Image (cartoon, rainbow, N blue to C red):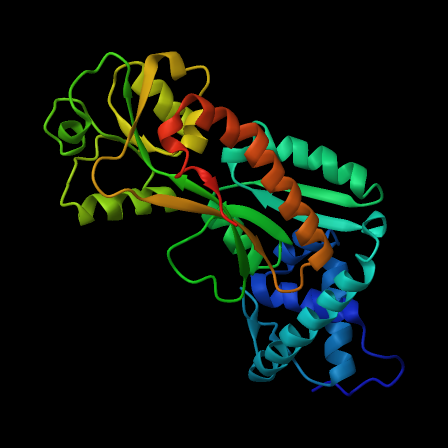
Length: 324
């Protein structure tokens, strides 16, 4: 056992690096996340253990494994570091112009118009801030938030509880049926599988695919899985080419401008259902930053997406809307 060091106080940097190492179980991954060298990460860990006088990791194991004392220490510093980060964020965000760092994740659904406008707006509002913008699936964004790799994200609200994260609903995005414009068969017959037109669907690992599958089960419809794809644009291209039909949302359909002349969008027959896009944050995210992102995102969704789309598709007016 190492002896406690009294030469200097406990470093916050040591604690943060220990937390990252405990999450990844790898010096290499911790170095990659922190931007430090492996030797520097190892030095900080050893300094922390020397200061405490205990072994926090079993250094003979690969991947790295916490000792029993390491587990106890991690539980306590997780709470402490969260409180410190929240205090720092609130203290530094009183004046947004002084904000220094923001990590934001968004789903691809907003890449065309909303996210670029948000990026420009924030860069002007917080001129000295370093930004990280990450585009990923909703599942990935939520996991990155849980791992504290992002400060806030815009994602589809998952069916399960978010537990340690906070969400603020933004948009109600109803599910609709999209078919080739040449098809005249009634929509209920197609959704029920009473046609020769294949159902083209989102990849099963996406939240949106699970929501669609659950609704089809509720209405007693079982459709064969002929084609799965993670890209909405590819689905729209396939439908436009007459290869099948799909279930998507107005927000996603609005991005497929290139293919829209060959597509027709219809209400989902029977009981309607929708997904919710939310602004999801860690508990220590600055309230000031959250408010300004929330305001700008809502403004962009209303002006750039909802108003133009509802104007040309009136039957969506009460369904495709912001959530107050």
